[in-house]
Length: 396
Image (cartoon, rainbow, N blue to C red; front, side, top):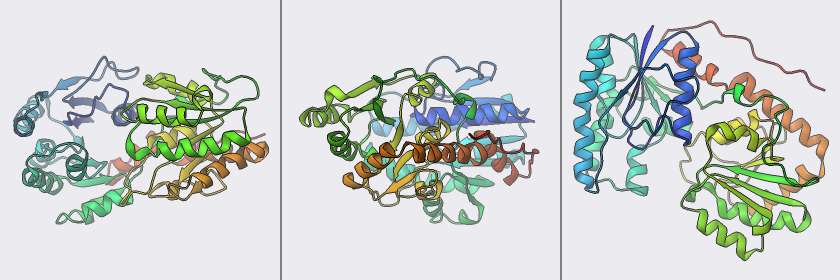
């Protein structure tokens, strides 16, 4: 079976380090692992293919540059002609899988014209994101593209209930929308992996992984760690990632006298993440309250696959993934004292922390691997592939 995977989003470097990049890589890798011949169509490769994707045929789409926002939007729209022509030239394909992007519709319309399944993965309400966090010149045109691509897709895959709710506003989309959260590649997180950045003996490490953006709740994390550190002075904060909130976070931690107990790695390659997670005792996802929280955070799946107890905000899909006090801990968004209390509880009770860790890992190994995710997606298109049983690790 030949599959065309399309990612026309200029902001997604398909061979890069961002969470969206890992998402693309893992879905392509999982499709290939099921014996499918995958061609990758993308506007932004950014570097060489990562391990396991070297043999995937890559077809470049026009890159859009410049500071003229109106011109960029028109150029992104015009790229649909190139995508359609490239699909027709390189095809035929038995399936088209596309990651929804703001200005792309040609992939789903090609699939409909070719009478093959068109699966559209929707990760976010991109029109609202673009208008709020960047610049959207022609909102009406973006709405027309959304209506067009959602109508052409046979199946819409929402990564969370909130994304599904967003799609309900488009005519006919609700009945074709299915919620399938993100996943993790367990091969990256073998049991017993040695830490790559261990702290001094006896150190308790609180870890965070991600792009340092305003919606990640880093101020709450700094406040909570300050409270926790007063009671546990042999603790450290390990921040893996970089982004626009780095400087404000550094200033906050400096004001609190915590820089000596904090380690920033900066941006790292995906291959470095497992060893860094093995260097932590707990992983945090301190999201603030956001109305319509629609994320399906990859970091949390990776924390759990690495056998870390997770402390996360009780918000959105996280409240479905994490069973409080069983495979992780939940606390009210923005409540730094509650976050500090959860960290303290995990520190004080090492045996219980170990049980939570085991349950976290078992949850993702059984239910949330990328293989499982892609199998569920293919099932929707009546392309069922026999599933392998859950992998169950021996417990002490």
